[in-house]
Length: 308
Image (cartoon, rainbow, N blue to C red; front, side, top):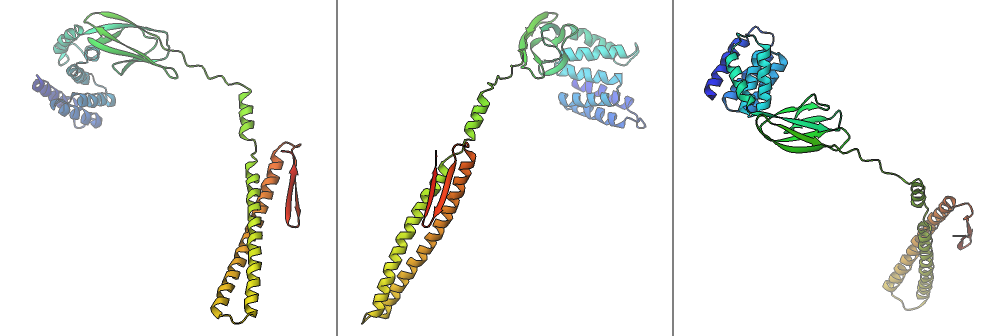
């Protein structure tokens, strides 16, 4: 059977596509479809035959498309294609008697699904293959067996169902497409409250800054005092006798290290005080007008007053 069909397809190919035909692209797709059909790749052959027909529509190609759909057991589509072939060709067309017999066979392998749905402008598919859109003109012709019917609507949830269709039957199926979900209601007072809460200024920044500043000031005073003490020891050692050079160098190094540490801590304390002052002023500007802060700087001290 397959060898006979392949030979018939090759015969059609040689007579339908002449070398000087302007639609050589269609001829290439058709010939590729013939080769795939002969290899048993019916799905690939169907794609190539349909492409050839789209490039240059010829009724003879409908025969090849219908035969391939028959091999794929897609009886409903094969019947539609073969009936188109009979309608578009004359009484003396090649394969006409064969196609008429095939049509009678196919009519015993299809049924109908009377689909009812409240959706309008939605796509209808049978076994994931689009077959039309709502509203339908009449029942869907489908191949016998278990079929999955689906309704897909833009912006709405879809609906689907399965039916078993016997030859000649008309099965009724009702699919209700859910309405679009309503937009979530938003309380008018929630957004301002959440916004105000999210933008409420925090005290943690400037409070932490002043704590760090205080700690650095205390450390500066402590290390500075230690430096003065060690400086006094160094002066005493220079005046005492006997004293070794190594002892003087050791004491000098200790005094110098403490002095440097004191200077570094002092600089860090000043930087921390400046940062804390800036954070405090910033907080005061962000809070309500009655929550004003006052920052004062005095010799050796920084004062902050206000209501918190």
